[in-house]
Length: 463
Image (cartoon, rainbow, N blue to C red; front, side):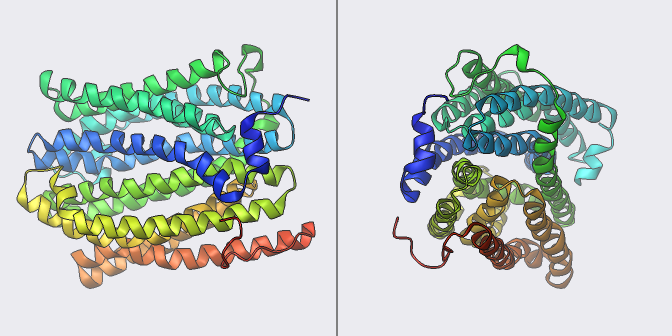
């Protein structure tokens, strides 16, 4: 029997709101560092005053999403199994998950790099690049793919460290990469004159430094779980657990990338200025996206631990409190971004046409914010419970069954306005679907476990 760690005590005993804030705030702060990481490239590229390089940055976003989808195959699946193993008191098994994940990082990193090299001349056209933005898109996208192993390693190791409750180490690790990126961006882009390629190289190096920090934490035993070389095996039960959760999540994120490619191709029909403006608006939207990801990442070990230990009532309380909290945060973000939209967009470009178009697009997209957090938490709940197909159904419903068809339909019927408003419309519908789906599953869990059902609508006494 291992000595109890303070993080385990929080997951098991702390009041729901306190536990969520304790686990989530360090992750959210780390995610905000990641937002800076995400925005800093766009900001420095915008200083070049070249809408083609701004457009190339936007067009390459699906490549980054695809790399993160590969990372999620390992990181999300591994984190879910790790937290459930801890909840069941199987520390050694949780440590084997870490070693297995590192081997998978190396394998999939090689696959991503090889794919980028082989298909380098086709990728920009698939992404929707025009003849003018082709070369910039090629440089940015292929650099990300060749350095994909570092992006994958950063995400996976950060997920695993958060899954054991070491959220402060996770935040520090992300800060290491972000600070490096902020320093390297102006050096590579302006001093060395590498332009958009320099931004991509800085991103890869920053991710690599974060990954090295996380690896050092394990090797120097700064974490609750440790890593030793005898644990480096590819046991089929562990692979099955990782892939059963990870594959649906990865497939869902790949749909996100496909949707982004479709959006970019449709936006290209309105010119490179629109593509550049859309890219800025989408990057600003990552402020909300990463905040909700932080809440979800903080909630996942809480729900996974209590599900693994059979404490279903407590798990349900986390779900209820988390949905209420993210909805409130989303509303506040929507109002703030709506008011300051011209300033936010203008910070990334001196080009007036891009600024005007980006402000309009951003004010349309932020209508999604009060609804995104609840949907994300519903999906995270199923991942924490080890029910990947339910999480997958939610993801394909949001992208494949709702957003992509709406994107084509509304763009056809209403043109540019239809294109930019299709996302918030899809998110409102999706929250209704996700909430109904989750309530049904939790009702069944109540009946199986004999617990008293938690009403997700009423106010928790723990808040």
